[in-house]
Image 1 (cartoon, rainbow, N blue to C red):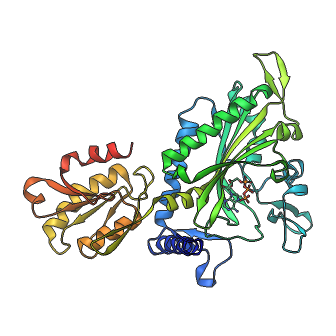
Image 2 (image 1 turned 135 degrees about the vertical axis):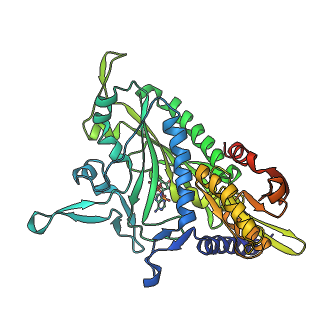
Image 3 (image 1 turned 90 degrees about the vertical axis):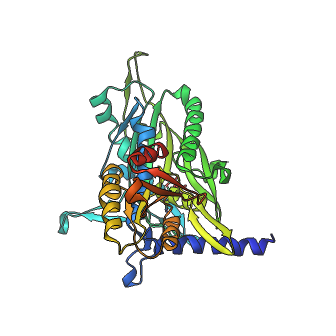
Length: 409
Ligand code: ATP
């Protein structure tokens, strides 16, 4: 393919993803009825479900399944001193088109009238962890190495928000601050590098499109002594997906925080390895990884090949015909209701003919479509259609829960 053709194709792909997201209720432009607001997007029902599944998978792997990780949920508006000490007031800037430095932190006011003080919306979740370092140590007495984890919103007044949800002004981060002894930092840097890649595989990011970039000194954030960016081949180019930074003892030292290392019998300032993940960029890389077009009998089938543990809808239930009360009753009482109670993310779909329903569910990325037909009424079996192969099998209604449970493990 020539360069121009590739560019056009990539642009088309991005357009298709954006319109699918809107059409199917994943992502809408922010404040759309008032003409929108640059760099903001609102999340529809399936977008919220997708984000929730991503965050759950992340929390399960990095917090719940570990013994050395402590969760925190700190405020978005913090004492402004935090951002002075962290270096963000002085150094969290970007250059405008005419070369002027512009601090990208959003300012706001706390309190009224003359008492009002300027505060900031946090531009990263990391500081919420550092300022609770002492609280966490006092409450849980963790031994080194240990980590703190947080999922939450961050805000940046980006000069040029662009590329759909890639660069927005309000986004969500999933971050870990992992505290280690100084001499161990390289070992844990490598460790987290592979943990990050493992999670990307687990959620279904196409890792053949992921590339590691050793960030040079002049491009690194002010707090970092080493950074590896995980870049992704988006349709608009190879750009950052996640980052892994060695923050040294920069933050704890600036906040004048210490740790008593009982094993070594000394006071110390731990060093920090920081794996950081953006939720929006996870969604975007997943959409790009999952979007598939397949031509069959002259027709193009569009579908999202999302993993069952991440897909917003795990299965859709349909009565073959919506005007046959016995089918509707069976599908609702014996199939939909028990599955909905068990899995939550189950959709009732009786709109249009079966072909239309399959196409709709393909675009949502639903791995299984379950159809109740006239045979079901006598043999208690349903047709389960697989999203990726299009193959259909007959399954006993009583086996459905286990069938689906196995697929989402
Ligand atoms: P970039 O160079 O793309 O501006 P960054 O290096 O400033 O990103 P970090 O400060 O490392 O980003 O932020 C950590 C993570 O937060 C990023 O890896 C990314 O996933 C996410 N992120 C940062 N800025 C944005 C944004 N404006 N919109 C969406 N996600 C973002």
